[in-house]
Image 1 (cartoon, one colour):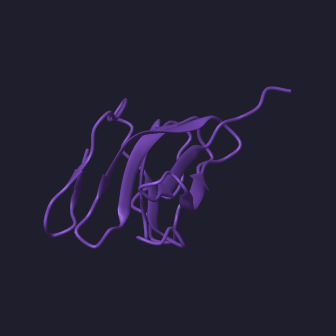
Image 2 (cartoon, rainbow, N blue to C red):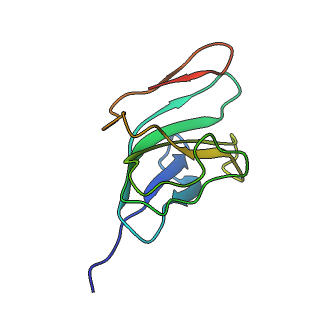
Image 3 (cartoon, rainbow, N blue to C red):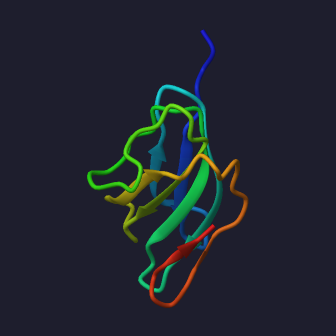
Length: 107
């Protein structure tokens, strides 16, 4: 059996003590490749997926058999995914992310 990986987001305090952590992934290999923090402290991330990634209701692309990139946003306390979606198949990979003052994410 080959273990599968998930994208992990962990918030630590200045001393390195974990405040919270969250995983995002399905039964395949998923990995985070970039993240950004918006003005409200929410965490926006992007990464690669092998598929079957859990998405949130109303996601732009709720399911896909061919998409390889995802985007997600967690609340500042790590307690809830505000969104999780596949990105268009035309986006083959993601390596950077930024968030503007209005909270819009750019990959």
